Length: 100
Image 1 (cartoon, rainbow, N blue to C red):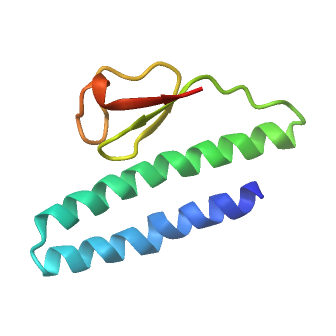
Image 2 (cartoon, one colour):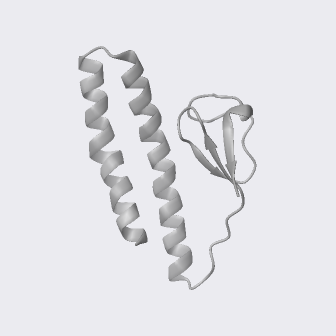
């Protein structure tokens, strides 16, 4: 169910990852702070993807998806050709994994 996906992503964006990040900051765990930041930003993209998919389904249209590119460093997800640089973690294009 797409709405369940949207709800799950929204929970992660608004509650889960911000709480994890606060704990990581309090414990001065720089790696954990970075990881939770990456996850939070990637989840924002996932929420948009679920929302777009739901809108398309509600319009009784087929979802057109190209090659999905996922950054192996932070989880940023992109439909189409991989960007030259990840907008979340700045990883190079070579760090993207393609899924057809």
